[in-house]
Amino acid sequence: MATEFHNLQELRHSASLANKVFIQRDYSEGTTCRFQTKFPSELDSRIERTLFEDTVKTLNNYYAEAEKIGGQSYLEGCLACTTAYIIFLCMETRYEKVLKKIGRYIQEQNEKIYAPRGLLITDPIERGMRVIEISIYEDRASSGSSSGSSSTSGTSAR
Amino acid sequence: MHLGLDEPVRECQYNQICTRNSSPMETLSHKKKRTPRRKWQIFPGRNRFYCNGRVMMARQTGVFYLTLVLIMVTSGLFFAFDCPFLASNLTPAIPVIGGVLFLFVLGMLLRASFSDPGVLPRATPDEAADLERQMDAANGSSGPGYRPPPRIREVVINGQTVKLKYCFTCKIFRPPRASHCSLCDNCVERFDHHCPWVGNCVGKRNYRFFYLFILSLSFLTIFIFAFVITHVILRSNRSGFLNALKDSPASVLEVVVCFFSVWSIVGLSGFHTYLISSNQTTNEDIKGSWSTKRAKNNYNPYSYGNVLTNCCAALCGPLHPSLIDRRGFIQPDTPQPLSHSNGSGLYPSTQNHTHMAAATPLLHSDPVMMGRAGPPPSGKTSLGGPCSSLAPSQPSLPSSMPGLGCAGDMLTLRDPDAHCHHHHFVSPEEMPSPLGPSSLVLPFAAHGGHLNPAQLYDPASQDSLHEDSVRGLVKLSSV
Image (cartoon, rainbow over all chains, first blue to last red; front, top):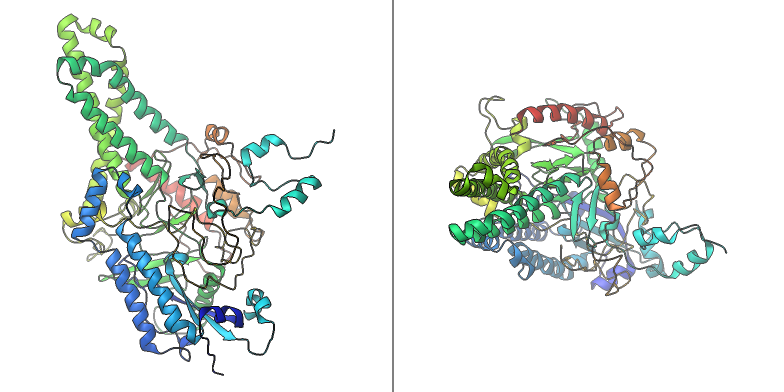
């Protein structure tokens, strides 16, 4: 059954949560934030492998950029130290700027790629940077009053 | 006159959080008013939050106030009694430098004490269930050769095999270098130690503030010590030693305090300088995780190789954001992390519709709504005064692990003064324990990896056993 959703609103109103896949962190390079690029089997029929891997690799690159220790981070650190960190009352840290970029990227990916396939990515920051949570939705084409019951249907999905 | 069962006095202390109104009239009127609550109010750890979630500290803060008082009194006496003499007889730069040092010390102390050390939020029910499924699958599948038990994952970092342990409280596999603090009941990233002097854990996010605090405090202590001695000597040259002491009696107190502080603070700064330059945490150093005594080719996989890079990475590295979003508003349909209360929380634990537009919350400054659902936050929601101290409601203990709460609470340092001071609501499960404060408490998280998972696992009892042995160890080895 082909599930075609045209946008996120339709997803919410006409679909119910079927399953969640969690992409765990990849600690092979230390404590820096990286996610595993292994393709989960539950998404096999839902999305192409390359698209998924691209998304995860781009996210990994963003996080690497945020946590990069180099000239700019040293400058920011020294400046902050000399002002006794008061400067962060008016300025955003580099990490926060990158997190905003990541938020926008995830939203864009959701709208363009994942929602049309009945999937939804949750920003890892909302899960404590432990996992990338991908929610898999099933179309409830049979039931007419799906919008009312969709918010409470998740328990039955388990 | 009919008096409602809830006293107005309690309302001032607990404001709107205490929903134990038993008078029917009040429950009717309060039913409609549902001001959105912030996440810090249902935070499952044993932390205290002040200023509506902006400030986060450990439960026991008595020693922190002692630290504050010591620093302020000593510095105050120095500025009041010694500085006038020194400024007029030597140079006015002395009080200026002293002032700058004092403000820096205070700033770093407050920053280290009040900020989130890098607490890892607990797993949502879905994540925990997923992990349990994976562990059960690993348990069931048969395979030849050595397999680590399912509650341990092994990962190779820079050529070293590191074991990631499963935290039973937080229901996550702890990242490398993270540890569970039994005093605060949180997993903390890059856990260094729990410092009672600072009243908080020292972890990834506040390690540099802690280090700068002890470093600048060493300078301040040495500075005050040196100049108080100079002051006394100069005065003695003029009017004799005894007269000098009579003229500035405060100097004696300052010298005594500084003399005893210098040894411990300077020693601690030296120790942490060594730790920073080798990129280790206190936890790892005490356990000897990377020492060559364990294995011939044991080395620290996190070290960058040279001292300078290690120092720069620790002190000037990027400032990670807080992961717990304590000032965000609770949405009724966002997943709540698992706390020990099985369903006794105010919001259902199963969650279905996550926020549609994965909006990134701003992490520690503004109250942001996550997702589109839920009531809009009222602009002036203030649950009490600007700095009302309100302990988060302690979740009740589950019936399946009765030992957890009692043993866990025995691990907390008891300071009766702190209780009175903060009007905090002592839950009936807490028991007073006879433990006194110790200088550097290093809780070892209970590592149940070697236990048979089929046994009923009580992490808190493991915690307390390890805790006692470690405390003994630390007292011997504390600098």
